[in-house]
Length: 294
Image (tube, rainbow, N blue to C red):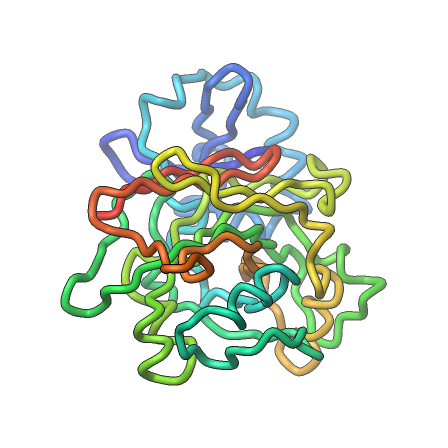
C-alpha cells in the first residue's frame, strides 16, 4: 500500500495512492480521530487490513490536485542516518580535497550512525532553503529510508525485517562547510528543510526484494547518482541490529540507509547546489521527489 500525508486546503489528511491512476483516496474518516500516518503505522495490525478492505470504495481525487507533505511530517524523534555506506561513495568522500569528518578511503568497520533533526523534514515537492550566510557548500544525498513498524531493542539480524513497516525516500541535504567547520555531522545535516521525505510511504509487502531497488538523483535533469540497494556496505538487517542493540526503536522511526557515489563534493571541483537548482531523487517503486533550492 502506498500512503501519503496531504492537504487540499484544509488540515493534513492520510491518503491511499493509486500511483498508476494518479489518484489519492482520503482515508481519514476510517481512522481514529486525529490519527496521522504515525498512528496508522503504530496500529497497522488493525488499521492495515481495514484500509486494504475499505479504501478502494472511497472517492478518488487526482493526485496532482493535492499538496503532498512528508509522509511523516513530524517524526517522533530525529531521523537515524548512516554515513559512508556505499563503497564508491566512501572512495569519493575520501579523495575529495575538502577536509571532512573522517575523510578516509578506508571502508568503515562499523556503521557510521548520526542524527538529523526532525525540524529538517520537509515535503517531497517543497522548496529547500539555501540558507545563505549559514552555508555556501550545499550538497544532495539520495537515500532509501526504512520506516520501523514494530519497535524493540536488541533486534537480531534474522528478525530485523519483522520490524520494518515499509520504505520511503529521503534526500539527506548536507552543508559540507558546516560539517568541516564543526568536525561532526549534526549541524551540517540538520538545517531546516534539509530532509525532503516522500512522496510515498510504501508498505513492505509491496517491496518483495528491497535490495533490487535502484536509488538515483538528478540535478537540473542531469543524472548524478545511480546504485542498487544491494550495494550497501551494511545492509538493512545490520543497521537495525546495530541501532537497536542498546536503543529502543519505536514505530515510525526512520532510518536513512546511506547515499551512493555521485554527490557534489565528489566532483573536482565540487559541484555544490545553488539557488534555482532542482534536485530529483527517485527509487524504484517508491516514486520521485523534486525540490527546488530557494
